[in-house]
Image 1: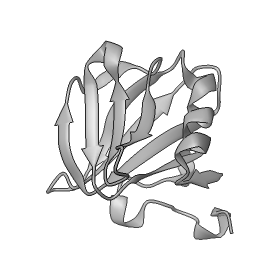
Image 2: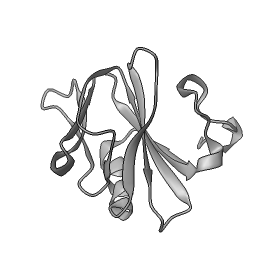
Image 3: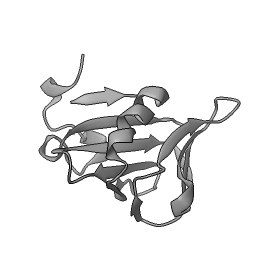
Length: 122
């Protein structure tokens, strides 16, 4: 399992998944936490991008992963997860984390997302 909050590293991990599909997987009742899943037939592992402090979302619920990117605002206050060609944008004030692993390693509860915490990177 790979877990990162580093935007450059996260964007680098997205590159091989460009031919995959991205969709909204989970969200909290208040939509303040939201998880996107990226799946590709070329890989056994999936990628989740988990947004914290979500403030704004627009676009489709499912779209091609090609063009998906993560950026920080100029003042470093906000994080944007976007796919311009799909018309998707998610703005968070709490940043985001990217995690890559096997689907069975994760739950559908964003408050207790990792099923086996011993597999988390130290």
